Length: 600
Ligand code: M6R
Image 1 (cartoon, helix red, strand yellow):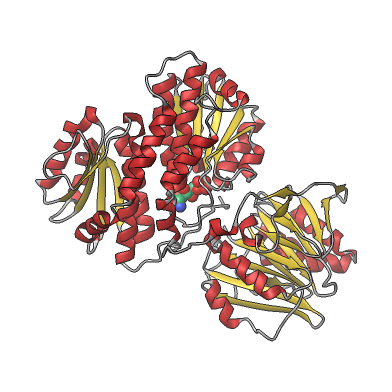
Image 2 (cartoon, helix red, strand yellow):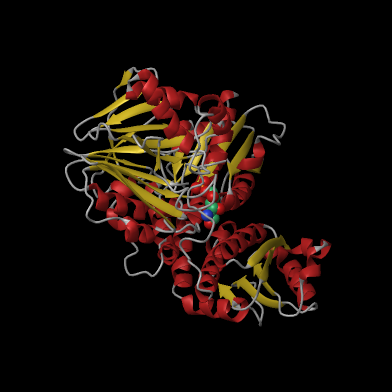
């Protein structure tokens, strides 16, 4: 959450920073700001709202070859110009942007800054005020920043300018992501490499509790104690075109359409020359030697985890538990003797998951991260990583990352089953190929889903999704998609559970989307549909070939019975997309949300 950029080179920093922030807007978009340093001092421009609003207040006459920028997702203090970053110290000597949450900011204020009035409601401002305070005492900026950072509890990624020395940008991080981009006579700073591909594809990782001094020609990494650390840059395997919308009106629609390609990509990446599944031996060992798997995830990735549990249990007989990351540490189950922890995260940065990862590592357990961003925090810190190869996902609503996660779980389950000597009666890569084709067929029928959204959801305030067995998990995802982008109150229910209370909410015309792709529960879910129809509900039944009935709203072509969620979610994604569109919602950047949830 929140995006940071920085630039120090020979060009005017303004446009690079603004373009960088536009690429990072998915991380938070309630206010934004930049600071440019030049011989006249530091010039700060900030505004409530999107980067477009910020552009309107930036004075084009001001230029400078170094600067920092920020796009915010508010944690402390309402979205406003005052609370927007950059923040400045008492005498405006230091200017700072920050991503994260400083848990002890009130204590630090009492102990060190009781004599000053803060100008904002943020936890962030404390950092910049402390830097100035300590710089006065220590007379050494590096020492002042190191001292400040070592006092902070919580998470931070930060970039700091000093008005008295425009040749440097100071950078530090703890738990929140931040990278240094390395160029020729130019260096940049970014929360995500995407933001600075405009300058370089060479990036340097920063570890927690390091201080980095960035000049035009040098990047010096030090521990907070002052020891210099040598580190080589890596090449970001990203192309600028991967992060453009192209001819699509929204990233979400583009990403829905990319799903068949993602499936084929996964097949290719995980296929041996003889057509078998290729996975790392270490991961195989970890899977086969564990007596229980604990999947930890949040949001859409949690829903993929529920499907992952089915796949692993059905194919390998190994018991699996799926836990919401933010709850796990407060309500830890009794663990098995030999657990394997699997973290599912599109971004690889979700703070709730990292909290669990750190704790279970302390307990000495093996960890695997399934992520779309290898090199992300969760990927670096886990013992093993499985890459989902979905390509950058920009829309806040996750689509292709979800289906990619389930595809990778299929291969993980199949590989584990084979290693355990369990005979399987299907070829997973071939079945994923069929999934890709069916996805294509569904994506080609967008008018049908637009019509469904129009018929069922254009005026409603609420909607229910019901399904049984694996369909129930897809209903959870379908309802999340709908609510997060269209703001329609939507809930996913197990078909049989509705009548234990929630059916009281069904009235004349209440839309109920029923998913019927599971043969063994087809009759039961049809019964549940009748129950809600008898109470006035407007049913939208999405079924699968071979199980369809006369009045079904849409019939999905058949895929392997274990892989139905990979295709049945596509109608849900498209219905949510069109419902949001018809309501004039901001599809890619829904209110109150951010793509990467880096605060707990
Ligand atoms: O990056 P992650 O997969 O860890 O993110 C987890 C959730 O925040 C995420 O899936 C969220 O629920 C999506 N925006 C839903 O579309």
